[in-house]
Image (cartoon, rainbow, N blue to C red):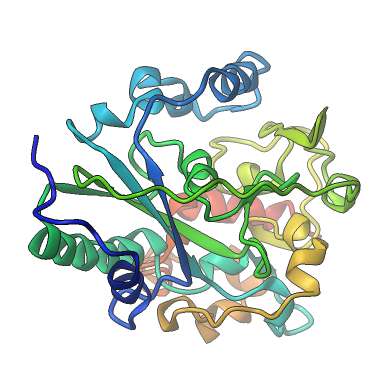
Length: 315
């Protein structure tokens, strides 16, 4: 196992991660360990209730999900970074356009965050030694769990990470490293008595499990249905004007309404061509137009067939 050549300094690490070349808004550090039993049990309950819907990949690699050492042998620390994207309320939509989740209006976050964290990981290896692995929402890593453990934020009732004083409109990316870095303490906060996301979810998909814990039923969640679901949508699904994703639980959250909005990375600013998509335009879209319009976009996750299906269900 490789170890650091000398003590990793927090100030130097922060300067590296928040510099323009990387662009993290905030970061946290957790000591590597197996995922605690309470969280693992909650995850198993989510699966047992079939709340993962058709996302069968969430059932695979359970041992890896519980033990980051299986992603990087000898891992000692996890550095979790938050990258801001525009808040839904900041986006100006033409009246007749279909809505796309704010996170998907810019470049594909998988590529952007990985490129930035790869640069950070290389700098960490050169400065402090050790080995690194970057994970951005593709490896079986419990990202929000580790974000909480790292002191980056806490899990809100909408199921998303809340960065204190900055809200939930962030992408997460993680650097696993064999360097031992002093961990930050977890954020001991919660949503208290607020239930706005639960009450305002258009599909009633957020289930209150008590003790400021919720479970999201992906079989109902409009974000999951418009992005991950394959085939026909369940009967009586009402998308309204949503083409891809759903921002309601973030839009109504006080943390995204009453706190200063972090500056998004330039790659995540909305593409003008995506702000004016009408139902008619989508239904008439050819495969070549689709390929060109959504080049380097996370929206390609739904494929053309998925977007056509979604458009047919809009009102």
